[in-house]
Image 1 (cartoon, rainbow, N blue to C red):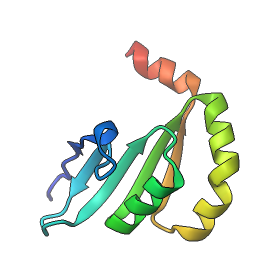
Image 2 (cartoon, rainbow, N blue to C red):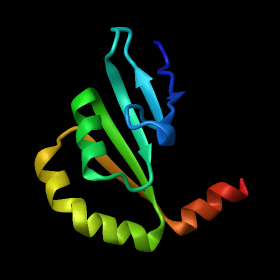
Image 3 (cartoon, rainbow, N blue to C red):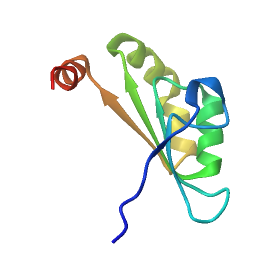
Length: 98
């Protein structure tokens, strides 16, 4: 069994790469696209079209609530390969302390 390898992308410095990703053995295929924060619709649409699976880890309790209220409906209707995971303030503190 081969363990998948996550690689840091250029993320913030380019719109063409995620923050983290797992590339396929097939050239230009992306198995997993991971973004952090609250990406805009065009970035999620691009990720969904390029990768087999997309995970967005959102953080920042107040800003996430606003982002989710704005994006929930179209995210759930349009994309079946996108997952959103919220990292709460409590969990961020736990991660930081370890």
